[in-house]
Length: 104
Image (cartoon, rainbow, N blue to C red; front, side):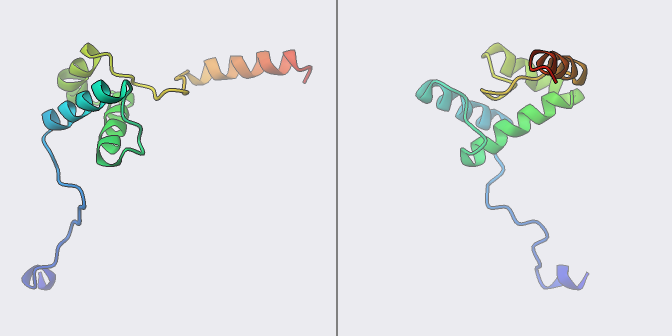
């Protein structure tokens, strides 16, 4: 209460929170300009892209119902380039095959 009385800021954000639709449009503009989706290192927009991928990976109910469809329609890459999403079992099978090829 004392901190509230002196105007203490509880949450510091250097990035203004924009509506989802604005970030979506920024993402589309980036894609049209660069020919690829923004990397995570692309500042606030990259953070937004990373968040969308996290919501998707977590199968967030509201995200899947309302926003994932919009990203699917435009061909959004759910897995960053260079990464392949596999299940644990698939990864284990790949490891076993690699070990057998390399005689380990």
